[in-house]
Image 1 (cartoon, rainbow, N blue to C red):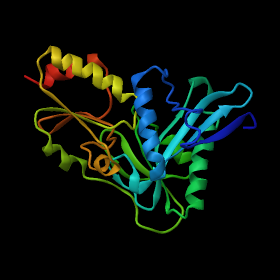
Image 2 (cartoon, rainbow, N blue to C red):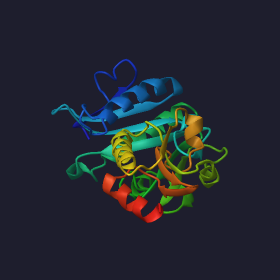
Image 3 (tube, helix red, strand yellow):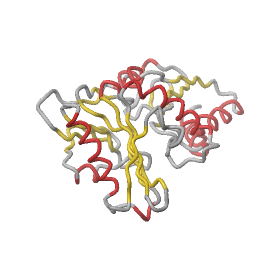
Image 4 (cartoon, one colour):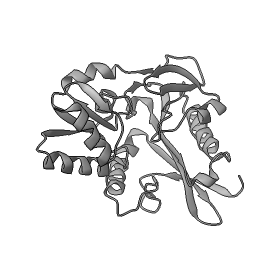
Length: 254
């Protein structure tokens, strides 16, 4: 790992090292994520980027925050909570870079006297799977369909995190709804495309932004960054393509 350096991102250097979700800086989501991050640093959010030193190229990052301020439908007080971890491109995966970033988070949790580190994993394409965390001493303590798992690395005794009752929140949403946050920059494009389709089909679509961690913790899905809900039924719990949206409404909305 002598070829990599880890850069701590904060409000002072984020302009030099902007969000690295491997989006084009001209992408709308890139800018919304940048503004979202600037508001979160005061809440204890940390981003660490992984650079190949010789090439000056970012190959990954990890984003985490005190559990009290997590932007997922969880109760993770006393823990650091990982929002995202990403390594790119594919040909450098499985070389220990992901573990390097996870260990950075664990180190910070120890230094801050936290009970441990928590994360929601999924075997879907939009979140990290559990294998990386199992390799780093995490264990699964709760699961939910279709493939979500709440995993923790315990550092000291304390109350355990839990998944909040997101299903209870669904009844609040009548008609067709998107509930989202700007925690994930890939959401912006999906919402724009879905709204265009809804408008063309004369569908009444209500779009609600989750603007605080508390609101995200009370989201109608575990991931919380994007939920498509119709009359209290969760149709999709992550950002989707416009084709997928068309297929869903053709099936679900008569």
